[in-house]
Figure (cartoon, one colour):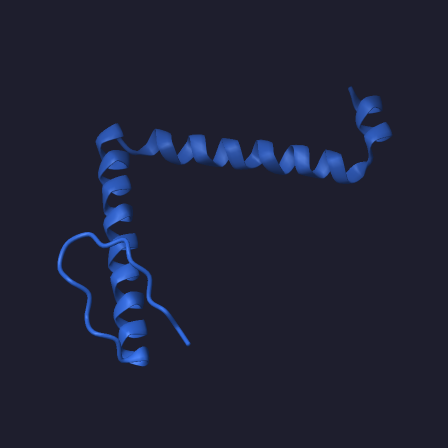
Length: 81
């Protein structure tokens, strides 16, 4: 196996081990917490993303001076001149 990596180059060998280390790191963290934790974390992350999106949209509206968006889900775009 070592010969194969020498032919492919040391950069390939580095990335192979870096990916393997990353997978092992993730497995180690996942084993420390129950499955319910990961589900709640996923939901919290989605809520955080939405909060940041609203924050950015509000800042853009204030900068441009456009009317505030209607409540509910919107699919429009803010036109910046």
